[in-house]
Image 1 (cartoon, helix red, strand yellow):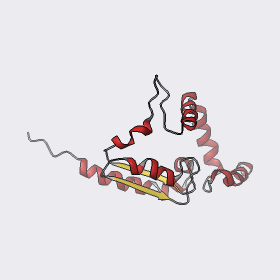
Image 2 (cartoon, helix red, strand yellow):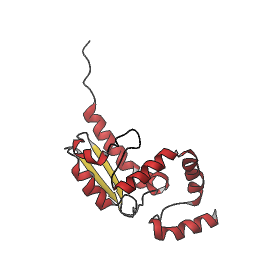
Image 3 (cartoon, one colour):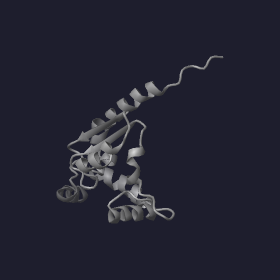
Image 4 (cartoon, rainbow, N blue to C red):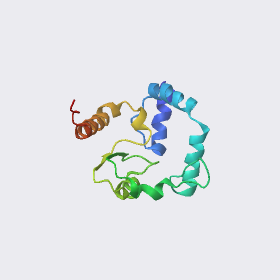
Length: 149
């Protein structure tokens, strides 16, 4: 674990991740990578080549990013200031600002990188309370009135 933590610390220069813990990575990432389907990686690579979010099923391809303006549902977008995969500025301009939803919120977590949202223990304290608050606020708005019997 010490060696893995040292490698994680060294890789932070490339990944931007500073909150990973070796034991979480060892168990969590192994589970994720063992179960990751080739299709997800193929779609990611295809999207990188296209410079857009592209489907991986059927022909012709669906370019999801051509339709962001159609999103009208409430949306919560999370971004990391250290994210080098989904850069927060680009994500805000290319996705968040293009959604037509009148009820949308963009939360930037300066100290987090891409992979840390899912596996860094700090997200339990830093991110999840914001998600729960947003969900609770929207659950109250979406509750249907009681049905008269």
